[in-house]
Length: 296
Image 1 (tube, rainbow, N blue to C red):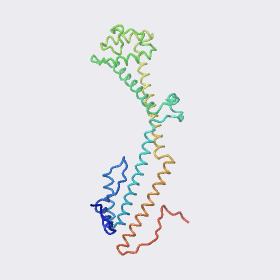
Image 2 (cartoon, rainbow, N blue to C red):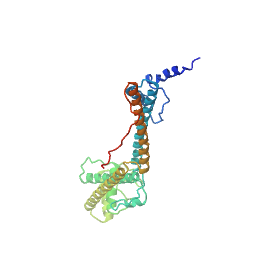
Image 3 (cartoon, helix red, strand yellow):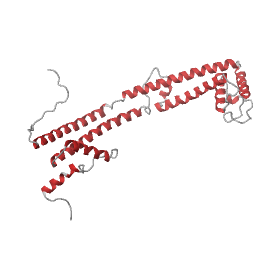
Image 4 (cartoon, rainbow, N blue to C red):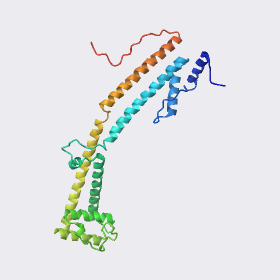
C-alpha cells in the first residue's frame, strides 16, 4: 500500500515537492476570491524567492499567504468605501440646508433616490410641456398632433388659467372619452379647445399661451436648479464618505500593520536562511524603522 514516505529523509524530500509543484497546501481562498488567481500568485512568489529546502519553502509559503491577505485588506477597504458611496443615494436626508428648494421633501424623510426620481419626473413633464408650447406657437401644417403632446399643451394652458380640464367640453372629443385616450385630434380641434379654455379663464388666448410658456420655462429652470443642488449635496456626502469611518479605519490599519510586521519578519528570516546557506554572515538581530524620525 502507498501512503507516502515514512522516514524523516523521505518526508524532507517530499516536502520540497511544494516548491516544484506550486506548493500544494490547502488553499486560503474565500468564496469571493479566485483559486486560479491564488495559485498563480503563490507560484509567482515561490519563483521569485527561489526556496531550495523545506524550511525556506515554508517561509515562502507564509510570505505568499501574508501578501494575499494584504491584498484582501485593500479589497475590504475598497468594498467598505463603495458601500458607503452607494448608501448616499439611499440615506435619509436629515441635515438642514437653508438653500434646499426641496425642504418639504426633507421633512418627509425622502431618500436621495426618491427625491432625484421625483425631480426627474417633474423636470421631464415640464420640459415636454415647454417643447410642446414652442411647437404650437411655431406650428406648421404638418405639426405632429400626438395625443400625449396635445394633452401636455392643454394642461399647461389650463393650469395657467386655473381651469379644471375635467369641466371642459373639448371640440371633437366624443362624450365619455378621456382626452388622454383620444387619438383623433386635429389642429382645428386643438385650437377650438384652447379657445374654450381661454374663454373659461376670461382672458385672451395669446396672452394665456405666452404666460403658460413663461411659467413653464421658469418651472424648468427651477427644477434644473433643484437637481443641480441635489447632485451637489450628493457629491458633498460622497466626499465625506471617501474614507471608512474611524472604527473601520482603525481596524483596517491595525490589521494591515499586523500583517506587514509579520511579512517583514518572515522576509528577514528567509533572507537570513538563504544568506547562511550561501556562506554569508547573517545578523541575529535586526531593527525595522517605520516613518521619519523626529528631529532632536
